[in-house]
Length: 639
Image (cartoon, rainbow, N blue to C red):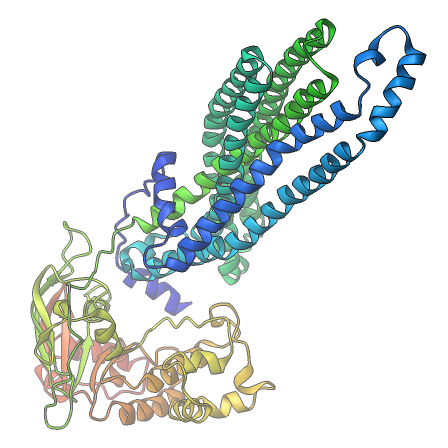
């Protein structure tokens, strides 16, 4: 708890990033999606898209011709000519002979009818099979790009993020992309194509009135659906926001399980979560009710058009201009047309919802990378000095997390390659800010930072961070095994190398005594381990990384005195011939430093060796005397 409280004080004030620009037009969202659907430099994917579109066209052509063949079969089999007169018995006798002699004609039509129906279904399945790899790859690439981008954006953004809400944004965005790719490409486009083909065929087979009713119904249907869908889109956004809020509150509460228990605030947390769920409930009801109204309006439009066309067809049957086969054809077309059109309303709403869900994920991709490499930035080179590399120089460094609040006010120091510098001072003096600047989580406001004579703003960030190892005060572990967490320092390291690093960090014996050894799961954020155990795992992880620059940010603050002495001995061995920066509150951990700088109010108040600073009787000496009451230190007189 002491560590948690101190961390909350020392954390830099977060500058809120601008609100995510989620309100984009549908066309902008679709335009952002197209590169994933038609990827550049991927001829295979483009060929698959083209083949899938060809199968889609063939499937729709076959579907449209099914009613035509069906109507011809009925006309071929239905009684006609004299059979329709009042002399029924003789007529039937005279009709029977030609019907039998021409039996091959309807038989061929029936076979053709079966083949066309099979073709319609087969081409549709082939279309989906060919396009599956394209759509899934597009989803994978977008999810991967979002994941990488979130690792690339600045620490400033992540200090203000809401993990639960962000996770929901990504989940819904990926699902929304799958929906849009599946439905838009092979439902909206094919249905629109079918509508055009059916309208043309109806006009050709019958007259303009049938086509006019069909076309008018489609236009009214689409207009009504689009208008109500826009309103539902706003409801959906509200539902997404409330869902994010509920998810964030739940995850935040569970991550802080111990804090909730410490203060007995289970009922308070449940009330906050229930309030968020209640807002989500109200938004969900509005979405559902608007969907019901949409379905009723669509059914009304379809039923009215169907009734008008059937009345026209019945009139044609009465005056002899319409055969039984044509009557069946127009009825079949309308049923065949309006069934997908009715489904089109659901598809359209699903696509609209998918686009709304994708908006926030694309908004994450539009968050600018605050700290970016210069074009063509080279890797950090290692310049050896007396057999060691890693000289660190701060030249007149000024920095503030906010423009109106400066943290570092002209800091100068040099750590020679292989040397050890300790940074001490009161809370809020800017000690941890120095480590963040060196790791380039932020860029300096003025001055510069050099490693081996190279300005860190001019080199690639990955090479810079590969050269620096950090053991933070507040250690966070992955919810995985101890082996994985130590091996994270150098992915691909052997078990022997992992165990060697664990021995140097004084944690190997502890791990081997566990029932599952290195396969022990450490739990969420490493909560199954004690603070000292977590910190030793973090030290082992950094040892395995084998960097040439070490930053120890209160690396032994959670350890008891005896373990701290063991770890300090291990760290001294690891730091040999490596440049080391130690950020410390406990002055006993820095007495062996080559130089100690004392920060106060963003400036270097004192600097020198441990003995020289004690002899000076200044701020460092007073800090040492104050800690002597709590630790077995040798007090010195304060002058």
